Image (cartoon, rainbow, N blue to C red; front, side, top):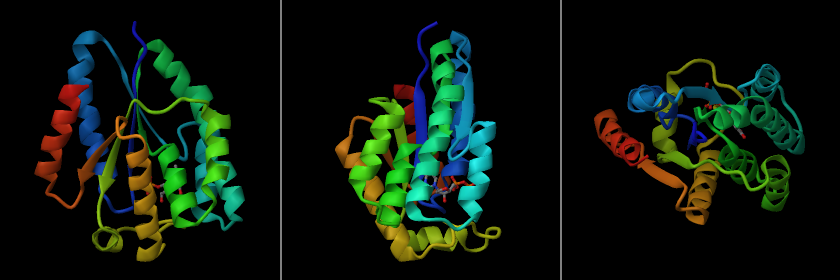
Length: 206
Ligand code: TYD
């Protein structure tokens, strides 16, 4: 079977990414059923037993910024080795709720870690490997914070300020400009129906 494809979903907290990802997965499963490809859903930080343990720590325990970036990439290395690379080699398609763009956006844009350090880690951990497609849910930070508002107890990232998310969003958009062939940007302030129409077009093109 041909090698599978790797698709990532990104956006600031409150962009609606997780809701749309579940719907996208179901549509993709339908589309791929005739060809026998399996769809694997995963997330970062996480996706492996070690990665999920690191996620718990990353989301709730205060730490030095460089430690945070290193743990994100440590979890990612494990994710690539144990789950993503073997799945793609088997011919499975992998959908990940976040990947490396999130580290550039959150630890780089949001928290201000110099980009050259993140680029060095990116080369170390994944060589030239990049997602085949990244769907970026773009939304103004004030709209996102309203949407997050009523949701559960916020983690270390969800409790950040609008200024933090403005920088995070800016870095996502810069990454998209740097690799336009890989990104599909969705205006996430639209209605769910509008967004689904756009996602359907993206799936049709895959
Ligand atoms: P998120 O993907 O929003 O999951 P949920 O919808 O369950 O809250 O949570 C993951 C958080 O981790 C999110 O706030 C962004 C942050 N994060 C980083 O800061 N850097 C990274 O490299 C990754 C993958 C995530």
